[in-house]
Image (cartoon, rainbow, N blue to C red; front, side, top):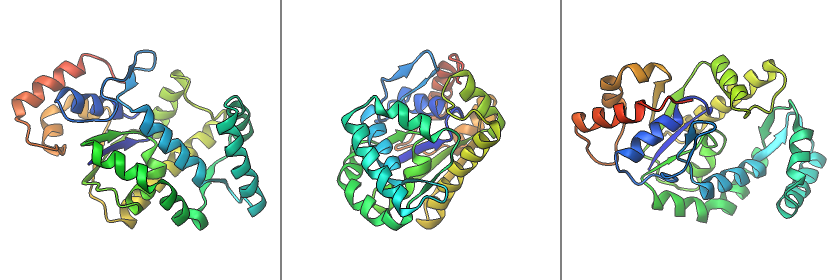
Length: 239
């Protein structure tokens, strides 16, 4: 399986759309949201990633009492969806850390669905892998390559603001949030010895031949077929 990930607003949707147009079995291949000019994400996979992230998350310096309250809160949010708005308001500009004391428990909880999705698709794209890749790797998902779309963090923040995806009001905290995401991602790559390829957005939009040489494919793709598909996808300006 090829995992496509990044901070979000970093070219992941362009890459995923490229794989979808090339005919590979990618999760959420028919999903596209014109308003945010993004997509190719499976809602089922995203629901799983959100659940894993919720199980992992604690606030910086979170106490055991906070962890207990957070567990109860997560259950209530699942039962009463409108409480999710209150949860987001409570989080505000806070940075979320991972509860590593419960890591193995979280892996065991989600292992069956992780392996189901990993076996089902050749490619899965989701920014949520930044926080959850370690759980997928520990669960035994066969991850051949992690394809990471990198973008200058200030530009990620600006793009997220325009798309109304940014929950942080303080730009300084937003920067730290995205830096944390990349930190968790590269920690997972190091801890589980995963193969990783970095491509830089928007630079790769101007170098399709170089991108072709760098990208992994589930099966061989001729360069002329890749370039034709690239220019087809390129006509839609990515976010």
